[in-house]
Image 1 (tube, chains in turn cyan, orange):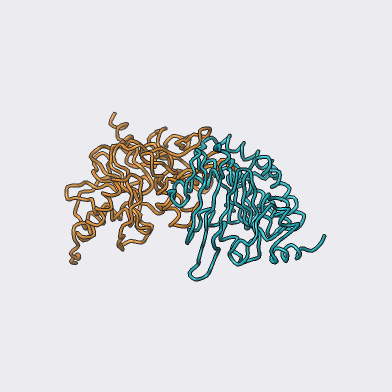
Image 2: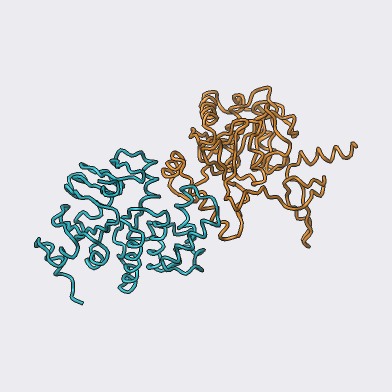
Length: 260
Length: 281
């Protein structure tokens, strides 16, 4: 097996208890390069807990997450030092929040928002930072004239697109997305999904997308994981799970979508 | 009237020992902000309570003290602190930079180069260079610990994006000894190069924020910048109306209500010295 055939991210028996309250239990899966995994389920099913465990923002009560670094070594994320983890977070990973205000600096310009990661990894040439930021604004379809405006004066859809540009500027291999289209209206959602799908294919990104919107899962993901009450109840190829759900709960989820 | 029986230099000996320990630690880790148990001083916060405590702790009976406020020896803050130590420590005071062994300053570095036998004490209002970029103190400490300073350049980027050049003119962030990013207190950036490889020991005291930091003698102090927008030690392109100096930091003085103005050296001692040399010649 060559290096690139090995999984990028491996979750093994991830379990999280908040005191006596279960967050999620015994979640295991492998994610390969260029693969998009959707995690679906209703509110409180442990989707976001799982995402935070994977991205080391929470420490698991049991289980571990292993990740293949750019140098080819697969490491247990819990063993990485904080500096290494931060470095990973701003180079090889992206994290798209549902609320763009959490993922952006609302009071500094869009250009600086996109450039921040570059400056954090040592870019010290203003012209080049700005040039790269401009390119990325083009790619996420934000008018270049808005580069000096803070996201505070952006619309919801633009903020979300800016957040995506800010995350992708260091060409990460893995992106975590927490309800990336939450709170946007239908036409803006469609545009954002279209953009995301394009970028994911073009850049060969691996992604874990948490969503309660099955349409998002169908459009973006290759594989799907259905969660209920903190546990994974069904997993499989996206079209397979959505067109032919096995578990009663999955059937309920799929059938609860209004026909167009 | 009987003056109250103060200890030498106002603070009690235990307090001075505590502050000296913080100073030693600060010197050992250049640019690192050392927390200390700042005391109430008989002056309001913002008037140099941090600087005064540092001065009181390093002052000895043989020291000659100079106090400057915005470069000048004769403004309120400078006069009252000088009097304070003349009264509580009985030390000799001076206005001449070269004569002083200990100089407490607010927002300027003297124009006359400092020597190995001198200590420069800065009064610092806000010691945290990342404060207005990252409001959480827990987070800024972590950023310092991990030397994660990308944020500082975000500020400089914003300056250029808005004004076309780095418009920060004072409290210009520096990197000390290749490790810690430090706020050089609100000195004009004109003074930043003087902090680099300075022969004198530089101590920074922030009373309200309870922090002490230091630059040991002959330490590398680099002002942050971009490759295509390098740091510039800017000054008003005028000459001093009194001494004619064209290489000093100038204050603008309004002389009437018809738009009359003149520029004079902010360092009053340096200016006087130059004028004295002229009249003698």
